[in-house]
Amino acid sequence: MKKILTMVMALALVMSLAVPAFAYGPGEGETLDVKAKYNTSTSTPTIYSVDIDWDSLTFTYNEKNTKTWKPSTHSYTTTTTEAGWDKTSANITVTNHSNAAVTVAMAYTAAATDSGVTATLTGGSKTLAAGVENQAAKADSVTGTVTISGKPNSSVTANGITVGSVTITINK
Amino acid sequence: MNNQTEKKNKTKWLILLLLLITVIAVGVTVWALFFRSSGPALTPDYAPVETEGNAETIPDDSGDKLESPNGGGSVSISYSTDVSIDLSEKTASLYFANPGKSNQDMVVQVVIQDTILVQSGTLQPGKQVTTLNLLDGAEKQLSPGGYDGKLVILFYDETTGEKAVVNTEIPVTITVNQ
Image 1 (cartoon, chains in turn brown, purple):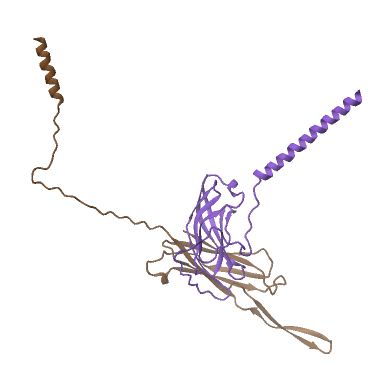
Image 2: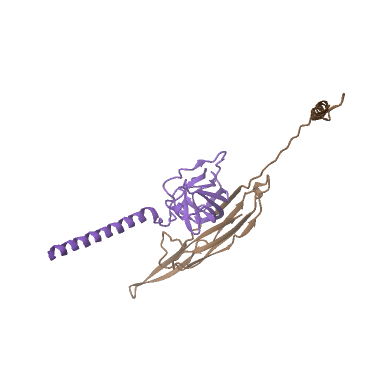
Protein backbone atom coordinates (compact mmCIF):
# COMPACT_ATOMS: atom_id res chain seq x y z
CA MET A 1 0.00 0.00 0.00
CA LYS A 2 2.72 2.34 0.96
CA LYS A 3 4.60 1.52 -2.22
CA ILE A 4 1.63 2.20 -4.39
CA LEU A 5 1.00 5.50 -2.63
CA THR A 6 4.65 6.50 -3.00
CA MET A 7 4.60 5.68 -6.70
CA VAL A 8 1.45 7.71 -7.24
CA MET A 9 2.90 10.72 -5.40
CA ALA A 10 6.17 10.51 -7.36
CA LEU A 11 4.24 10.36 -10.58
CA ALA A 12 2.28 13.43 -9.51
CA LEU A 13 5.54 15.30 -8.76
CA VAL A 14 6.99 14.41 -12.17
CA MET A 15 3.83 15.53 -13.86
CA SER A 16 3.95 18.93 -12.05
CA LEU A 17 7.50 19.57 -13.38
CA ALA A 18 6.23 19.76 -16.93
CA VAL A 19 5.16 23.41 -16.74
CA PRO A 20 3.44 24.47 -19.89
CA ALA A 21 4.62 27.77 -21.36
CA PHE A 22 1.87 30.15 -22.29
CA ALA A 23 2.81 32.73 -24.97
CA TYR A 24 0.78 35.32 -26.75
CA GLY A 25 1.04 34.89 -30.42
CA PRO A 26 -0.81 36.02 -33.40
CA GLY A 27 -3.92 34.46 -33.86
CA GLU A 28 -4.88 33.22 -37.16
CA GLY A 29 -5.22 36.03 -39.71
CA GLU A 30 -3.59 38.76 -37.47
CA THR A 31 -0.84 41.02 -39.07
CA LEU A 32 2.27 42.51 -37.49
CA ASP A 33 3.91 45.79 -38.69
CA VAL A 34 7.56 45.88 -39.64
CA LYS A 35 8.92 49.38 -39.01
CA ALA A 36 12.02 51.18 -40.24
CA LYS A 37 13.33 54.36 -38.62
CA TYR A 38 15.84 57.04 -39.76
CA ASN A 39 17.78 58.82 -37.11
CA THR A 40 20.28 61.58 -38.02
CA SER A 41 22.51 63.80 -35.93
CA THR A 42 24.75 66.62 -37.13
CA SER A 43 27.63 68.04 -35.18
CA THR A 44 28.92 71.52 -35.94
CA PRO A 45 32.44 71.87 -34.63
CA THR A 46 33.65 75.40 -34.03
CA ILE A 47 36.04 76.64 -36.72
CA TYR A 48 38.00 79.74 -35.79
CA SER A 49 39.21 81.84 -38.71
CA VAL A 50 40.04 85.54 -38.77
CA ASP A 51 41.56 87.94 -41.30
CA ILE A 52 44.00 90.60 -40.11
CA ASP A 53 44.89 93.55 -42.34
CA TRP A 54 47.25 96.36 -41.48
CA ASP A 55 48.45 99.53 -43.23
CA SER A 56 52.15 100.18 -43.46
CA LEU A 57 53.30 100.89 -39.90
CA THR A 58 56.41 102.74 -41.05
CA PHE A 59 56.18 106.47 -40.39
CA THR A 60 58.76 108.80 -41.92
CA TYR A 61 59.60 112.21 -40.49
CA ASN A 62 60.73 114.50 -43.33
CA GLU A 63 62.72 117.59 -42.65
CA LYS A 64 63.90 120.05 -45.32
CA ASN A 65 66.57 122.52 -44.44
CA THR A 66 68.07 125.41 -46.36
CA LYS A 67 71.57 126.60 -45.62
CA THR A 68 72.04 130.26 -46.50
CA TRP A 69 75.54 131.59 -47.05
CA LYS A 70 76.36 134.82 -45.25
CA PRO A 71 79.22 136.53 -47.10
CA SER A 72 79.93 138.88 -44.24
CA THR A 73 80.76 136.08 -41.87
CA HIS A 74 81.56 133.28 -44.30
CA SER A 75 79.14 131.05 -42.49
CA TYR A 76 75.91 129.26 -43.16
CA THR A 77 72.60 129.86 -41.48
CA THR A 78 70.42 126.78 -41.45
CA THR A 79 66.70 127.29 -41.73
CA THR A 80 64.18 124.47 -41.57
CA THR A 81 61.65 125.05 -44.32
CA GLU A 82 59.58 121.93 -43.92
CA ALA A 83 59.22 119.36 -41.15
CA GLY A 84 56.60 116.74 -40.44
CA TRP A 85 55.44 113.18 -40.73
CA ASP A 86 54.50 111.70 -44.12
CA LYS A 87 51.42 110.36 -42.36
CA THR A 88 50.32 110.29 -38.74
CA SER A 89 48.02 107.29 -38.53
CA ALA A 90 47.68 103.70 -39.75
CA ASN A 91 44.82 101.23 -39.35
CA ILE A 92 44.72 97.59 -38.29
CA THR A 93 41.52 95.63 -38.97
CA VAL A 94 40.42 92.20 -37.73
CA THR A 95 37.52 90.42 -39.48
CA ASN A 96 35.82 87.37 -38.00
CA HIS A 97 35.04 84.48 -40.37
CA SER A 98 34.53 81.93 -37.57
CA ASN A 99 31.24 80.18 -36.87
CA ALA A 100 31.51 81.49 -33.32
CA ALA A 101 31.98 84.92 -31.78
CA VAL A 102 35.48 86.08 -30.89
CA THR A 103 36.66 88.93 -28.67
CA VAL A 104 39.43 91.06 -30.11
CA ALA A 105 41.71 93.33 -28.09
CA MET A 106 44.58 95.36 -29.51
CA ALA A 107 47.43 96.75 -27.45
CA TYR A 108 50.49 98.83 -28.29
CA THR A 109 53.78 98.25 -26.47
CA ALA A 110 56.51 100.85 -26.79
CA ALA A 111 60.08 99.63 -27.27
CA ALA A 112 62.61 100.45 -24.57
CA THR A 113 64.26 103.17 -26.63
CA ASP A 114 64.24 106.94 -26.19
CA SER A 115 63.46 108.03 -29.73
CA GLY A 116 61.54 111.24 -29.12
CA VAL A 117 58.60 109.60 -30.88
CA THR A 118 55.30 108.68 -29.24
CA ALA A 119 52.83 106.21 -30.71
CA THR A 120 49.39 105.41 -29.37
CA LEU A 121 46.71 102.90 -30.32
CA THR A 122 43.02 103.68 -30.12
CA GLY A 123 40.06 101.39 -30.73
CA GLY A 124 40.49 97.82 -31.91
CA SER A 125 38.67 96.12 -29.04
CA LYS A 126 35.30 94.49 -29.67
CA THR A 127 33.43 91.21 -29.55
CA LEU A 128 32.89 90.20 -33.17
CA ALA A 129 29.74 88.29 -34.01
CA ALA A 130 29.94 84.84 -35.57
CA GLY A 131 29.83 84.61 -39.33
CA VAL A 132 26.38 84.32 -40.90
CA GLU A 133 25.80 81.56 -43.42
CA ASN A 134 26.17 82.79 -47.03
CA GLN A 135 27.14 86.32 -45.95
CA ALA A 136 30.93 86.24 -45.99
CA ALA A 137 31.15 89.82 -47.30
CA LYS A 138 29.26 91.10 -44.24
CA ALA A 139 31.54 89.52 -41.66
CA ASP A 140 31.89 91.52 -38.46
CA SER A 141 35.12 93.49 -38.02
CA VAL A 142 36.91 95.96 -35.77
CA THR A 143 39.60 98.56 -36.57
CA GLY A 144 42.29 99.98 -34.35
CA THR A 145 44.32 103.08 -35.27
CA VAL A 146 47.99 103.72 -34.50
CA THR A 147 48.81 107.43 -34.27
CA ILE A 148 52.31 108.87 -34.15
CA SER A 149 53.57 112.18 -32.79
CA GLY A 150 56.72 113.89 -31.59
CA LYS A 151 59.99 114.59 -33.37
CA PRO A 152 62.60 111.86 -33.78
CA ASN A 153 65.93 112.44 -32.07
CA SER A 154 69.35 111.37 -33.31
CA SER A 155 68.70 107.72 -32.39
CA VAL A 156 66.27 107.47 -35.30
CA THR A 157 68.23 106.94 -38.53
CA ALA A 158 67.29 106.90 -42.20
CA ASN A 159 67.05 103.10 -41.97
CA GLY A 160 64.51 103.41 -39.18
CA ILE A 161 64.22 101.83 -35.77
CA THR A 162 61.41 99.90 -34.13
CA VAL A 163 59.69 102.14 -31.62
CA GLY A 164 56.97 99.67 -30.59
CA SER A 165 54.78 96.74 -31.56
CA VAL A 166 51.07 95.91 -31.69
CA THR A 167 49.67 92.72 -30.18
CA ILE A 168 46.23 91.51 -31.22
CA THR A 169 44.65 89.12 -28.73
CA ILE A 170 41.81 86.98 -30.03
CA ASN A 171 39.73 85.28 -27.36
CA LYS A 172 36.89 82.87 -27.88
CA MET B 1 110.12 55.15 9.70
CA ASN B 2 108.30 58.34 10.63
CA ASN B 3 109.06 59.72 7.14
CA GLN B 4 107.52 56.68 5.49
CA THR B 5 104.38 56.95 7.64
CA GLU B 6 104.11 60.63 6.84
CA LYS B 7 104.54 59.95 3.14
CA LYS B 8 101.86 57.28 3.27
CA ASN B 9 99.46 59.70 4.98
CA LYS B 10 100.12 62.38 2.37
CA THR B 11 99.47 59.91 -0.43
CA LYS B 12 96.27 58.81 1.25
CA TRP B 13 95.00 62.41 1.51
CA LEU B 14 96.00 63.11 -2.07
CA ILE B 15 94.03 60.12 -3.31
CA LEU B 16 91.01 61.15 -1.25
CA LEU B 17 91.19 64.68 -2.65
CA LEU B 18 91.42 63.44 -6.22
CA LEU B 19 88.49 61.11 -5.60
CA LEU B 20 86.44 64.00 -4.26
CA ILE B 21 87.27 66.15 -7.30
CA THR B 22 86.30 63.26 -9.59
CA VAL B 23 82.96 62.78 -7.82
CA ILE B 24 82.20 66.52 -8.08
CA ALA B 25 83.14 66.56 -11.78
CA VAL B 26 80.92 63.56 -12.53
CA GLY B 27 78.07 65.14 -10.59
CA VAL B 28 78.34 68.39 -12.55
CA THR B 29 78.43 66.48 -15.84
CA VAL B 30 75.34 64.43 -14.96
CA TRP B 31 73.49 67.60 -13.93
CA ALA B 32 74.49 69.42 -17.11
CA LEU B 33 73.43 66.54 -19.33
CA PHE B 34 70.19 65.44 -17.71
CA PHE B 35 68.87 68.02 -15.29
CA ARG B 36 69.83 71.43 -16.57
CA SER B 37 66.89 73.24 -18.14
CA SER B 38 67.55 74.70 -21.54
CA GLY B 39 67.68 78.46 -21.91
CA PRO B 40 64.58 80.33 -23.01
CA ALA B 41 63.84 80.33 -26.74
CA LEU B 42 64.17 83.71 -28.46
CA THR B 43 61.65 85.07 -30.92
CA PRO B 44 63.36 85.35 -34.29
CA ASP B 45 63.60 88.84 -35.82
CA TYR B 46 63.71 87.31 -39.29
CA ALA B 47 61.79 84.34 -40.64
CA PRO B 48 63.58 81.07 -39.88
CA VAL B 49 65.39 79.69 -42.91
CA GLU B 50 63.90 76.26 -42.30
CA THR B 51 60.30 75.73 -43.26
CA GLU B 52 58.29 73.70 -40.78
CA GLY B 53 58.87 70.00 -41.43
CA ASN B 54 55.44 68.99 -40.11
CA ALA B 55 53.59 71.42 -42.40
CA GLU B 56 51.04 70.05 -44.86
CA THR B 57 49.36 71.70 -47.83
CA ILE B 58 45.88 72.97 -46.98
CA PRO B 59 43.39 71.00 -49.07
CA ASP B 60 40.96 72.91 -51.32
CA ASP B 61 42.77 76.19 -50.69
CA SER B 62 42.01 78.72 -53.46
CA GLY B 63 45.12 80.81 -52.76
CA ASP B 64 43.61 84.08 -54.05
CA LYS B 65 45.63 86.73 -52.28
CA LEU B 66 44.10 89.30 -49.96
CA GLU B 67 44.74 92.91 -51.00
CA SER B 68 46.96 94.91 -48.72
CA PRO B 69 48.36 98.44 -48.89
CA ASN B 70 51.99 98.89 -49.89
CA GLY B 71 54.21 98.11 -46.91
CA GLY B 72 51.29 96.70 -44.93
CA GLY B 73 50.14 93.14 -44.52
CA SER B 74 47.12 90.91 -44.92
CA VAL B 75 46.79 87.51 -43.34
CA SER B 76 44.14 84.94 -42.67
CA ILE B 77 44.55 82.41 -39.88
CA SER B 78 42.52 79.33 -38.92
CA TYR B 79 43.06 77.59 -35.63
CA SER B 80 41.70 75.47 -32.81
CA THR B 81 41.80 76.60 -29.19
CA ASP B 82 42.69 73.15 -27.84
CA VAL B 83 46.27 71.89 -27.73
CA SER B 84 47.49 68.60 -26.33
CA ILE B 85 51.09 67.77 -25.49
CA ASP B 86 52.49 64.25 -25.37
CA LEU B 87 55.53 64.23 -23.09
CA SER B 88 56.76 60.81 -24.19
CA GLU B 89 56.56 61.72 -27.88
CA LYS B 90 57.72 65.32 -27.22
CA THR B 91 55.07 66.64 -29.58
CA ALA B 92 52.17 69.05 -29.45
CA SER B 93 48.92 68.32 -31.29
CA LEU B 94 47.04 71.37 -32.48
CA TYR B 95 45.43 72.86 -35.56
CA PHE B 96 46.82 75.99 -37.18
CA ALA B 97 46.61 77.07 -40.82
CA ASN B 98 48.09 79.92 -42.87
CA PRO B 99 45.70 79.99 -45.86
CA GLY B 100 47.02 80.75 -49.31
CA LYS B 101 45.38 84.19 -49.36
CA SER B 102 47.82 85.46 -46.71
CA ASN B 103 50.77 87.54 -47.90
CA GLN B 104 52.95 86.84 -44.87
CA ASP B 105 54.92 83.83 -43.66
CA MET B 106 54.18 82.80 -40.09
CA VAL B 107 55.83 81.22 -37.08
CA VAL B 108 53.71 79.65 -34.35
CA GLN B 109 54.75 79.44 -30.71
CA VAL B 110 53.02 77.56 -27.90
CA VAL B 111 53.62 79.46 -24.67
CA ILE B 112 52.80 78.60 -21.05
CA GLN B 113 53.51 81.13 -18.32
CA ASP B 114 55.79 83.19 -20.61
CA THR B 115 57.85 80.08 -21.44
CA ILE B 116 58.06 79.12 -25.11
CA LEU B 117 57.62 75.35 -25.31
CA VAL B 118 57.06 74.99 -29.06
CA GLN B 119 58.32 77.14 -31.92
CA SER B 120 57.57 76.14 -35.49
CA GLY B 121 59.69 76.68 -38.55
CA THR B 122 58.35 79.02 -41.22
CA LEU B 123 54.78 78.34 -42.31
CA GLN B 124 54.28 79.69 -45.79
CA PRO B 125 50.87 80.69 -47.14
CA GLY B 126 48.91 77.56 -48.07
CA LYS B 127 50.34 75.45 -45.23
CA GLN B 128 48.84 74.02 -42.05
CA VAL B 129 50.11 72.03 -39.08
CA THR B 130 48.49 69.49 -36.77
CA THR B 131 51.69 68.39 -35.02
CA LEU B 132 54.71 70.36 -33.83
CA ASN B 133 57.80 69.20 -31.93
CA LEU B 134 58.58 70.48 -28.45
CA LEU B 135 61.75 72.55 -28.06
CA ASP B 136 64.70 70.69 -26.53
CA GLY B 137 64.16 70.15 -22.83
CA ALA B 138 60.63 71.55 -22.86
CA GLU B 139 59.14 68.25 -21.71
CA LYS B 140 61.14 68.54 -18.47
CA GLN B 141 59.23 71.70 -17.56
CA LEU B 142 55.80 70.11 -17.76
CA SER B 143 53.75 67.65 -15.71
CA PRO B 144 50.57 65.85 -16.85
CA GLY B 145 47.51 68.02 -16.40
CA GLY B 146 45.75 71.09 -17.77
CA TYR B 147 47.31 74.48 -18.40
CA ASP B 148 46.17 77.88 -19.66
CA GLY B 149 48.51 78.90 -22.42
CA LYS B 150 48.53 80.80 -25.69
CA LEU B 151 49.47 80.54 -29.29
CA VAL B 152 51.70 83.40 -30.39
CA ILE B 153 51.61 84.01 -34.12
CA LEU B 154 54.48 85.99 -35.64
CA PHE B 155 54.31 87.41 -39.16
CA TYR B 156 57.21 87.78 -41.59
CA ASP B 157 57.43 89.48 -44.99
CA GLU B 158 57.47 86.77 -47.69
CA THR B 159 60.20 88.56 -49.66
CA THR B 160 62.50 90.17 -47.10
CA GLY B 161 61.82 87.84 -44.17
CA GLU B 162 61.53 90.91 -41.93
CA LYS B 163 59.31 90.52 -38.88
CA ALA B 164 56.11 92.58 -38.84
CA VAL B 165 55.46 94.83 -35.85
CA VAL B 166 52.00 93.23 -35.57
CA ASN B 167 51.65 89.88 -33.85
CA THR B 168 48.71 87.86 -32.59
CA GLU B 169 48.08 85.96 -29.35
CA ILE B 170 45.35 83.37 -28.97
CA PRO B 171 44.53 81.95 -25.50
CA VAL B 172 44.29 78.15 -25.64
CA THR B 173 43.69 75.25 -23.29
CA ILE B 174 46.65 72.90 -23.13
CA THR B 175 46.33 69.31 -21.92
CA VAL B 176 49.59 67.59 -21.07
CA ASN B 177 49.68 63.79 -21.19
CA GLN B 178 52.47 61.44 -20.26
